Length: 543
Image (cartoon, rainbow, N blue to C red; front, side):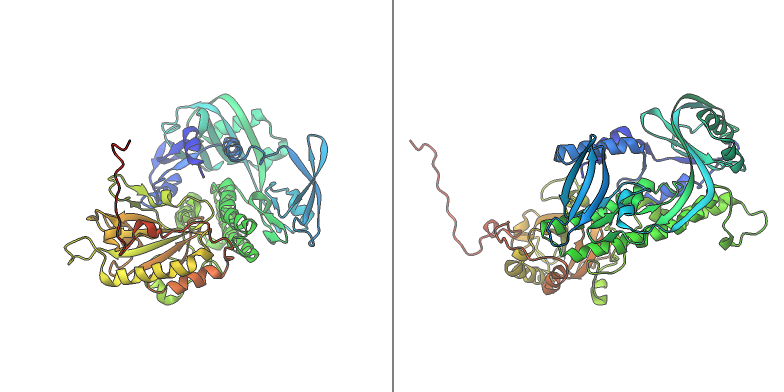
């Protein structure tokens, strides 16, 4: 999406973590569980601490680079009506710069926060509870004698203020968070009160405020909209769900919504996908959020110093031990790598195909390092699969034939590849706008791709020189496999390479065939003209 570089330049990269009880450091608690969950699972093996207002401005600038007319703010939705007989069925009345503006659109997306006007006007209920716990959050420039104050993520275990959050963030700021007692809340909270309470919360360490940028005190609402998709109305982010910031899932969950919905809605608008694919946004994301809400109820309670009753804690149980247990059990989900979706029209395969490898349908495809022909510097697989709204079909053709004097595929694997080649010539024009191919070969002795594959690769050719990809995915190199990956990096189907008809059946379930066969061709036969004589004419010294 082109967002990482500007985010990383400003945000605070966290690779270390420490928890304190008094002045004693406690290993493997707090932030440590989160950082351990990403080690060896991604090349972005850190947490990036950056304030929401900074993220929003970076996203706005990225949108302006793509289309300077796409972003109009501030604008306020007044009301809308729907006329299903029209292609642009939504008529929205918006107040912009003090003037009423009418906008006709196909879809109305509510990304307007927990008090969403879109959700309210759509009549979508927002059931849930408001917790009795209240929290204080603040950002500022501070000084402290805490040893790890700018080294990484910190948790201070307090008997009075719960599990105190201390996070270095962008621009020299620090975010501090702790519980607000009912007594304090009833007396009224001010900036001065917030700073004084923060000093007490981090004791025995000292705290001095150079500047207080922002603070808030809030009751935790845990709610989920009854649907995220109703006619032309779609809900994302806090408009669809609210919860605490205890597991750092506020804006992160909104990003997961957006990455799930974005390619589906874009594909529908482009005429690539059937409209019914939008139903999977509701079912996938709502199920994930409902899991988050249950997790958040436990985390919010434990951070506030109360062990939930369903744990049946013994007398004298340590609330921080239970909090650490919950963080450990849900770490993969919390960092996003463990988010998964149930089987549906997009996520589907048969039991026999699942035996081809150990990847799981509905889960993120693990990233690996691969090589382009002749290049001795590897690149991440995801660099070859930018999120541009298309599906990626990984053609895993297996390892090279160890008995061949020249680098060649095993004959059975070559036969399977040729089956797909023939099928592509007949069928690929139906889905060529929505699908990209990558051919991945296991081996290190390749000097010329078309010779090794006895024909052109399907899409780009990539090489798994160390065997990391095949080993991690659990692919037996003696067989050939097709792995289909959604635009958001989720494995959506797996099938044997020698059964290409399954590939087209899969895409036909939710894709609309292209009506323009001139878009391009993944298998460029001009690269490999078998059986045709070629000549060369030199025009040097021609007058």
